[in-house]
Image 1 (cartoon, rainbow over the protein chains, first blue to last red):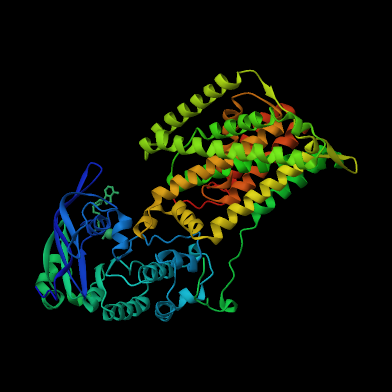
Image 2 (image 1 turned 30 degrees about the horizontal axis):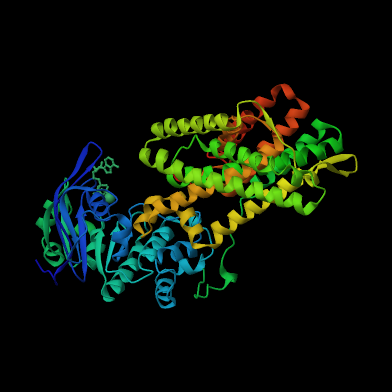
Length: 244
Length: 339
Ligand SMILES: Nc1ncnc2c1ncn2[C@@H]1O[C@H](COP(=O)(O)OP(=O)(O)OP(=O)(O)O)[C@@H](O)[C@H]1O
Ligand SMILES: [Mg+2]
C-alpha cells in the first residue's frame, strides 16, 4: 500500500441491495487524501453501485461509510454533495433542457460562478465555451461528458467521484482528458475514478482497487499493478501489451 | 440571479435551431377550421372562444404537469382544486352582489380580483394539506397515488356538496365583464378577452420564473433528472411541496375563471375537466410549460370548432386530437422528462 495520507473516504464492509438483488457483498475501500484512486473491474462487478452507494443514491444495507472522518452512512445525497463531493455519474446526468451555462450555474451551489475556475474549464474543454448558450441536450456524447466533469469541478471540492469518463470517447479526446485529470490532481483534489481504459487508469492513478462480484479483490499501488503483467491478467483479464 | 461572469461573445455561439412546428400548430388548426366553419365572423368568434378556453385549461393544467414531471406523482385529485376555486369564487361573488351588479368598473374589478385571490388562497392551503395527508405517504407508488388522490377528489367534492348543495349553481359575471365587443359581425365576449389576458400573464410569469430564477432552474432540472439534482446538493422535497402548492393555486385561479366561463356548474366541475387536463399534458409532453400551453390551446380550439361544425363528435374530438399528435410525436410535442 502506498497511501499518501489519512483516508478521505473509507467504506467498511458496505453491502448494498437493489430491490431483491444483493449487489455489494461487503466492500472495503479506502481512498487516501490527495491523488487519484482508480476503481477497476469487469462489467457488472459493482463499481457504479459502489459510487452510487457513497452518494447515497443507493442505501447501504450494512457496513459504514466515512468521509473526512465523519460517518455519512445515513446522510442523504444533498448533504454528502455539500460536504464537498462532486459526482460525475456513468450516465452523465446532464440537464438537456437547460443551456450549458445553466448546467454550470446550477452546479455552483454558492450561486456564483468563479471566473478563474471557469477559465480553467474553458481552456480544458473549449466546447463548453463555444456552446455556452446552447441547449445541453444538443451536445455530442463527448461534449456532454466534458460538461458533466466541468459541473463537478465548477467549485472547489474535496472529492471527485467520476464514473467512466472515457466511455465512448475518441482516443484523441481521452489523451486530452489525461492532461485535464493530471491538472486537477495538481490542485490537490482527491479523485475516485471508475475506469475501464487501463492506459488512462495507469496514467493518472496512484492507488488502485479492483472489484469482482461486489467485493474488492485487490487493493494497492498503481505502479505495482502496472508492472505486474500476471497480476493484471488475473485481476482484469488483460495484458499490458494489448492495452498500450 | 446575478452572474458576474462575462459569457463568451455571442457571435461564436451557434444558435439553437428552435423547434417551431408545435408552436405553429394552433395556427394551423385555426386555418384548417376556416373552411369547415364557413362564415369568417363565426370563425372569429369560435377562435376567440377556443383560445380563451385553452388559456383557462392551461392555468389548471400547468401545475399538474410540473408535479407529474418533477416528482413522478400521479395526482388524479387535481380537479378538486379547480372545483374549490369555482365554489370559493361563487362564495365571494354571491354576498357581494351589489358590487357585481354595480355600474362601476372599479367595484366590478375589485370583486373579481377578490374572487380570484380567495380561490387561489383556499386552493393553496388545501393543496398543502392534500400533499401532506394524501401524497407524501404514498410517495413512489403510482397505484396508491391514483387511489389516494381519487379518494381526495371525492372527499372534496362531497364537502362541496355538503356546503353548497348538489344542485347546479350559477352566478353572474361582474357587470362590466358581461356582454361582447362587436368586431365586424363577430361578437367577441369581453370575459374571453379577460381570460386570454390573465392566461397569457400566467404563462409569461411561469416562463419567467422557470427560465430566469434559480428556483426555476432547479425545477426544470429536477423535472428532467431529480436524482442528479440531489447529487448536486439540492433537496428536492421542499421544491416539490412548493411546486405542488403553486400548482394547486393555479388550479384554484383557473377554477374561478372556469366557473365564470361556464356560469352554471355542479360539484363535479373539477372531475369533469380532469380528462381534458391529462389529454393536454400528454399532448404537450411531460415537463414542458410551452408544450402544455400549446396542448391547452389545441384542445380549446378543437372543442369549439368541432362543437360548432359537428357537435355529435365533439366529445370524441379531443381524444382524436391526442391520438393524431401522438402518432406524429409519440412523446408529446416537447418532452423534457427522461423517464
Ligand atoms: N437498478 C438495478 N437493478 C437491478 N440490478 C442492478 C441495477 N443496477 C445494477 N444492477 C446490477 O448490479 C450489478 C453491478 O452493476 P454495476 O452497474 O455496479 O456494475 P459496474 O461495475 O459499474 O459495471 P460496468 O463496468 O458495466 O459499468 C450488475 O449485476 C447489475 O446487473
Ligand atoms: Mg458502471
